Length: 193
Image (cartoon, rainbow, N blue to C red; front, side, top):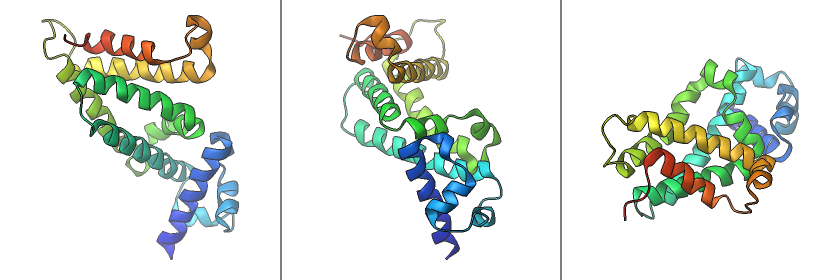
């Protein structure tokens, strides 16, 4: 029964953040949506951060599964990086509240329920693809890990600015694809001919 209630609390939080945004994720509201007393979450999650971390883990799991499915189709490392970037931006746009929650500094810093470790496999995929795409990287270029971190920061910024509409205003683009290609080219090098 306790695992069932724990899962219900997380599911209620996921639904709440999906429909209404991360600012609605109070213990009281999650408990109400799960159909339990407002004190019930504390029996399964010692802190509010631990419950929020459990909810954010679901977001990382979902995004990771989407990326894994996408990359299973093959393609060059460069093409896969562009596809990963597109999936990242699309996930952010479709799941704004969850995306915001997943990258909250206080959650990642507290590392409740191993949240950082949940996010790292996706980063390792990015590192591997950058290493493969930049196999002819000139001497003195940053390591694949550093280039992947810079690409991730670029993709995260693209996602945020695209969601807000800022990039569309600044560039007159109605498609994020050219921006994704430019980001990948800048951090992993252009696709080999």
